Length: 125
Image (tube, rainbow, N blue to C red):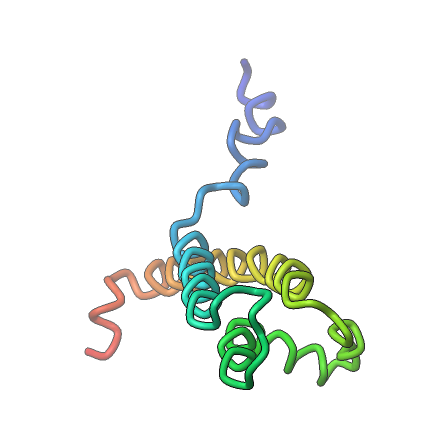
């Protein structure tokens, strides 16, 4: 391969750079799933929402998303929805959003490290 050809062709993993495994996003997703399991367990299951206490526990993992839906004008999406459907609709969309948030946070930390040329522990010094 000549030097001109090497400059024209991208590196082998240039397209896969954004597909790299991200531990921060994975940990955020696992923590959210853990929160869902704990809250569903405290409520006694998805079908056991008969008391206000049980409904409160089932609502905790969906609270930020339903607040956001209400403020965007899409609160009607959650009207007359079973708990199972609410967790599948809203919770299912939350996982990719949390993973993307983890990717963004990790990229920001890497950018700050590169710009400062030192570890994040030395930022305040």
